[in-house]
Image 1 (cartoon, rainbow, N blue to C red):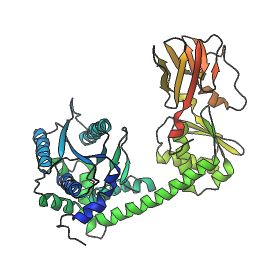
Image 2 (image 1 turned 90 degrees about the horizontal axis):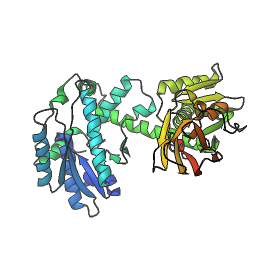
Image 3 (image 1 turned 90 degrees about the vertical axis):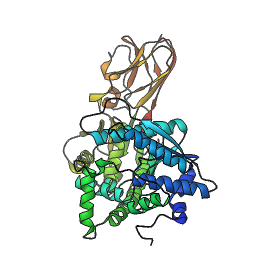
Image 4 (image 1 turned 180 degrees about the horizontal axis):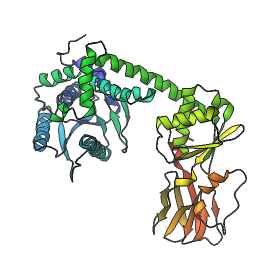
Length: 430
């Protein structure tokens, strides 16, 4: 095994960066530090020897938090140019926060990087290392994370908020070897003073990792544990997905039904994952907290009461089945279809599309609409699901129940429909 003072070889580069070959264009996030400079040097060398390598672009952020930031961004571009790579500086404009600076800077950085990559059809590669993975694991251990949290960072996945793939090809590589790779290419990294500021949790965990390493709990061992947790997570998620496909009955107005017997027969961890996915599908559209999901699972396994709420979804326990739909209490009030618009998203659950009629239409929850002119609730739809149905209105006049395909007489509409978009959440496709 090569020593930590040895740069990464061409053979190692070919193995580590092989996932980048799936993309026509890859942007490298380069801060100018030793890790990202090592990634930049490695990618430039790899692209020169790999005949089917993607186009490589370097992106660096001028965050404006320190006087040296603009100069450091220019320095990154100069070094990229010497390696034969194009480079762009992205600037974090506007007023900066006085507290939570590191978190805000990270969010702004990924927003800038994701926006550029989405506009230019590029995947985004970052230089997270074995030590970064170990620090992440320690932080999540401190919070009592479950299997998903202890799986650490993934080698590849979506960049939240952007239609961009995020790549972490160096999670198995030590920082020292990336620094050696940068030096071998003649690069001179900069050091961000925030990396030594113990007010930040990650810096404190970095110091703790050094202490733990003396007792055998080093970065390599923690990164290996995270990799094995990811393997376990993948198996559990496959089990969850297979169960949903086999046992979730999907109903067009946006509710579902699961037979209780097979659900209760699942191992506890898989049952918890099924419930969390159902909450994401039918609720407010965000992943619920693990502790809240655990409380719901305990209720389902034998707690008192006929119904519970998780993540904006209502779970109603019947004799032989579990009914899941949107909780009526906190729906989006209205959404407007202005003149010339044909569709609008409502309550993060439905895409409402209409044709004909006039401008100024609104989407409201059925529970907030007068019953005059509305059809009776179909017998198969639970009352709480009926209350959360979208209604298309003009002023106070009901025009349509688009999820049911119902149009009022003299509505003026030629078509109104509602696509339930919740199926696309929670890793489930209806």
